[in-house]
Each structure stands twice: as structure tokens, then as C-alpha cells.
Image (cartoon, rainbow, N blue to C red):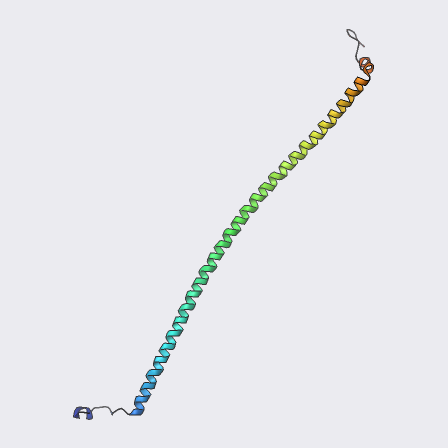
Length: 134
């Protein structure tokens, strides 16, 4: 019920067509706003995922650096051990050679001793007479 004041309003009375257009426009705006919110949520999710992936990648790079450093330390330690083993091997080879030479000398002395025991006369002939020149 329109009062006389409303009947003389400066704007025309709304029609059904205009009302439907307004309802459709509001519905479209709501749909667009909902779509915009969904897209914004997806963007936020993607941004968080990207940030998380970047943090994971950086953590992996740090871990790789630590592993490389440990591997290099192990390689250097192994090189030192190998060098020490080489020196010990050389020393053992040298001692073995010396031991073999001493063994040969012992055999030669044993042979001389056997020969001297077998021929005691030759041993006396080689010695100068006591108390005089040969």
C-alpha cells in the first residue's frame, strides 16, 4: 500500500523485469565472488605448497652438502690410512729383505762351521804358529 508520499516519488516504480535483472545480477556477483574466493584459496594452497617444496629442497641441498663434506673427510682419512699401510708394507718388505739376508749369512756361517768341524786340520794350517811369524 503506497502512501501518497510514495506515489509521488522521484523514481519510477520498479517493474518485475528490473527486479529479475537485479536478482540475476546479484546472483552472478555472488557466483563470481565465490569463484574468486575458490581461486584465491587455490592460489594460497599452491603458494604454501611451493614454499614447503622450496624449504624441502633447501633442506635436501644442506643434507647433500653435509654428506659431501663427510664423504670428503672419509676419503681423506682413507687416503691417510692407505698411505700409512703403504709405509708399513715398505717397512715390512725392508725387514723381510734384511731378515732373508741375515738368514743367508747364518746359513753361510753354519756351512763354514760344518766345514771347519769336518776338516779340523785345515783350520790349524791356516792359523799361524804360536809365538812366531808364519
